[in-house]
Structure formats: structure tokens, C-alpha cells
Length: 289
Image (cartoon, rainbow, N blue to C red; front, top):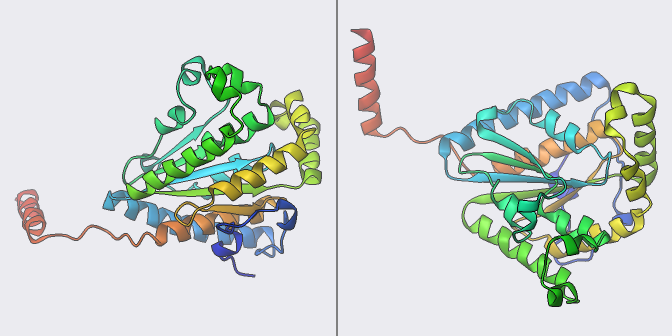
């Protein structure tokens, strides 16, 4: 089985029903060694593309990871990006907003962390929390200090979707390619992984009662994700729905999505001009003297 990124791309302009999207597919690897060999190849390719991206200094790439708890975001990021030069890549995790962040609009705290030209930025959770977690827990809106008329506005969520779409179009127009990945985990697999966090001592630190409380709201989260993906998938900034029950396979799919997206930018190493060649020739002469 070959991986084609387009197979996991959410349809533009159509309602997304997550129940119709697989959480597990036939793996592309045949053994643990086969998985490692495939990942090494993809990591090498991504490293080369990142080096070209950095040298060309024109585009930037923003990877957004969203998922339910225990879906494997951290693992996907660490394994897929393991070969990328840290100088050209930044990872930011967005948890509960600080008092300063709550004093600004909902896009402010992530806007401050956008990647510069030539760089890859990774958001482990993002401004999408504001139409996912906050939508499931509307009481969180009160903490954001919004004016009372806005809190009662029935079009609040539609307005946020519109703001996000316009924001991502702005980024695209200015050379930032946004790639959004939803790791699609089944409720049964999440249960197994949460139990593992209890049973394995080195995973205990990952577990909290909040994970169980959020799990009880699974249906609400799935509806929020469906609406979010439907409303914010665009041709320029697509969502990819990646089956996440098999962590190893999910990492291979993510790596292919990322490499294809950067490759499609059509970037290349900067051309060496005549003036630059003369400069290099003079440098060589001085070093050889």
C-alpha cells in the first residue's frame, strides 16, 4: 500500500462526518524494521526539503496538530521531525491561556508564534482550541472577558470560523503554507491508551482525571471537530484526517503529507549569481594564500 496525501484530505465545501472516516487502515509497513526503514527515508527527504526551504528564505510552513487526548500528537511530531535542523524549526504547545493571553483576541497568542520565512513552525494544539474546547465548554468564554452582547451572539462560532479562514488566507497570500492535521482516534483505542498510562509507571505523568472527564464529552467533541473541519477546510489550507489507532502508520502518513506539501511549493536552492561566484573565488584565493 502506498501513501497518497490526497486520500486523507478533507473535502472542500462538503460536510465532514467523522464516523465515515477510518481510524485504522491497512498499514504500509510489514514489520517494525519495515516501519523504521520507511520513516528514515521520509525523515531524510523532509530534512532535504527543510534545508532548501531555509536556504530559499521565501516561504514558511505552519503545521497544526489537533486531536483528542492520547491520539499521539507528541510522538508524531518528535518522530517525523527528528531529522530536521532545529535552527529551522520551532514547536509550540498551547495549553490553558494565561491572563495576558486572555486579555487579547483569540488569535493573538498564536500569531506571536508564527514561523518566519524559511522556517517550519509546529503548533501542538492551536487557535482551533477556541472553536473546539471552548465550544464544548462555553463557560470558558466568560474568562475571555468578551463583551456581554458577544457572549449572547448566536453567530459567535460562525464568526470565529470566518476569522480563522480569513487569517489563513492572509497567511497564504504572504507565503505561509498552513497544513492542518487531525489525528483521528477511536474511542476504544483512546481507552486502551489511557489505561496504559496508568499501568506503565513511566507513563503515569501523562494521566490526569481531566482526561476521563473530557472523554465523557466525546460526542460533543466529535460534533465540534466535524463542524470545525467542515467550516475551515480550504483549498489553500486543507485539513488532513489521519487514522491514528496505529501510531506507527499515522506517523508515516503524517510524514508523507508534510513532505508532499513542502515539495509542492516548488522551491529550490538559491541560484549562485556571477557576482557571488566572483566573491567565492576571491575568498578561495585569500584562504589559499
